[in-house]
Length: 316
View 1 (cartoon, rainbow, N blue to C red):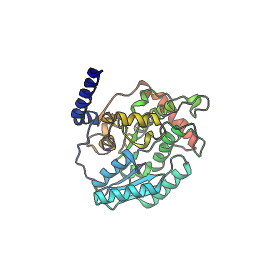
View 2 (cartoon, rainbow, N blue to C red):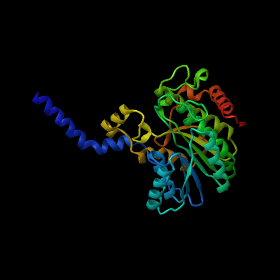
View 3 (cartoon, rainbow, N blue to C red):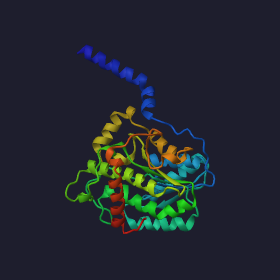
View 4 (cartoon, rainbow, N blue to C red):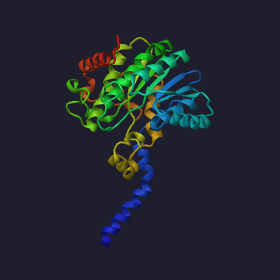
């Protein structure tokens, strides 16, 4: 028993001593570009907390006019106030955007377009994860409705402004779990079968397919787009799962901070010379492999058409 206790104590001591190295290893890539953004306009969804907040902070630090588009305006104002104080950039603004309601998305887009004549970077960062079965205001299953259809509609509504401001970029946050996802056209809303874990994976695959198809349709416009896996990050995204919250705490050494999680989003938004890689998938600030399903052209095209039908829009 004493031997086991001694070995366990040694293990904990070694873990403590190597903690900085472990954190650095799992922290992944860092955005290295020195690009500054005075006069540039950025919209980030869900930037009132987590990865989005850290992304907004860095873009504000580089001089951009940053719009925090979020459902919780009070939390958004608190985040904006903190970022303004930290970066000395007063141009950090909060606007209401509820991605689970197409009326709110349209209202946000209408207000933004009336307010701003340019848009250089759109970061579709917000998302939900492991929600109990529920539907959005428009009757979509929550994961596919918020994570995919909400951002699909928002991008559609803001795209002309992005084209007018080119060169411009669209960054879509996906996840490595897209490898598990499948676009189940016969049951896209999960009414026949629902599992919150799989529903999240399906929506993250949709993000990658959307990015691929969007890049194809944007060729020659000066607008490019990228899908991002931020890594395993300690954020509020896991709030619906007690088990994940517990695991994140137990294995905190192996989980990225929100600052680390924001680095690939920043890389895809800022790095010079990235235009030839439009439509590609990035992790740890470099292009990485996607699943065969995420490379399926027919699925990407069909998902695009089905998304337009569900949202009642025409997007050629």
